[in-house]
Image 1 (cartoon, each protein chain N blue to C red):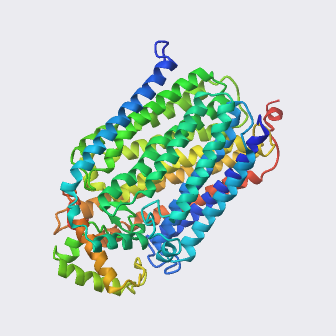
Image 2: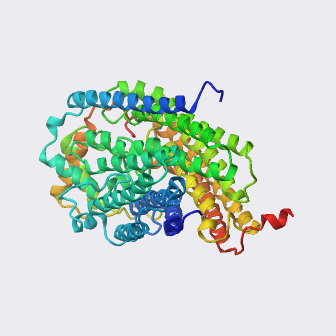
Image 3: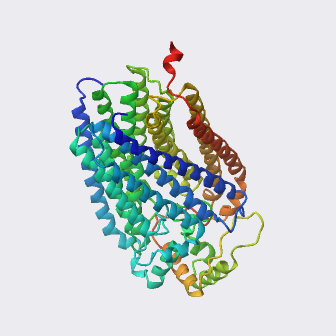
Length: 148
Length: 464
């Protein structure tokens, strides 16, 4: 690098650039946090949804599944499972999930296995409510199709 | 080695390498479970194996970074470490906490671990990479504070160089961003938004400062190039890293509920994220070409050049492949992501830790500036086997990912294959990845074997 580009100039770009973009990032974050209530329908986060999220976490569901595309890639996306398996109807989704959770692990040799988590009926209901709430967040039309 | 207190780096490096071996074993288990779904079920379900695999990675890299800091900070500051005793105490605390956490994952069902450790008091568990019980997270913070105090005091009483200033900045950033792991609101969208402040701002932010400064240190020592030149490069690299990487966080905000403008911000800035890694490659090769001395540790120089290239390919090129929003719409959360993750972590962070270990270990073990020629040859076999395996693992996962997108994501809902059916279609790639993983393990065994080959630096005799 030529003489006109000194170590001092490089240092100033590092400090100036970092501080500038940290401030821009904080500004955009503030704006995002202000806009989120319109997108995440937080008014529908009931006590059951909250319990469902905690169950989701305490059983490490993210260790196999993705949720809105984030997580492990071993098992299906669950951000839209409310539509895929419940057809967008609460009652059918609840019925589906109760049956599904009770049937694990499915005894097919060589098939990827989902453990039996021994959740109570009430807990499965919480989980279903959490997944239904998640499915209704505005995700810019992701995933591209019903298969997630 | 200039100062006796640098020797505290040794247990950190050794423990890091032991955890690395564990990470690879669990990677092989998971890889097999991808195709033999009931392998080790129910003893080790996939989610447990994955948690062990990723958490071991994070913890061995943290041990590596700490070892690197304990080694290079005294040398850069030109003074003994403030308190070697504190460094030893923290080593045992962190090693015990890490081991207990991994044993907890393996021996207790995760929900049981959550209850045992009182997760309901302050729920932080069960989020990807942040699965550690809250008590472990608090332990990590305590260890990090003690560690920062120790190296901070060392720098304060000694010489302040660009390298140790930037290393400390990176390490403080690491600790500060980790605090966001304690923020877990019941609103999943807010949770996800700030979860990335730990994950993205680590690996595409402050960790690049750590990587850059370790690389700069090793290059100064091995090439003898003027410090002024190296420091200018370092500022350029980390400047580019933060200028592109901070707003580059936006590439995670496309589809998780955040406003649409992140698709523009994330695409534009993250498109430039390969630049700092490209600069690191140029940096390493340029400095080696302009070297003023022939350092006997050829293996360390190979790692230093290798980490630049592999970080550029893995983080840079494979990151760019799927970072633009219109592409990411189809690839988000597929095996493409897994492909990128593997080569990026290996190339940037595993390899930079292996670089400093390769440089420092001979000195920490009293073998002089380098190990014997024979030991270096075996170490370089390890380098090539592991690195080439990782290239192929990445290529196979990319193949799986492209096919997965083609079958499952691109068609209309009525025509798309479901997830499990698409997984069956791409199974051949998973088998190839698993076989390549075994080659990686052979490379790792070579690498470990090189430590067992006795003898000191014998390059002088061989050149004579």
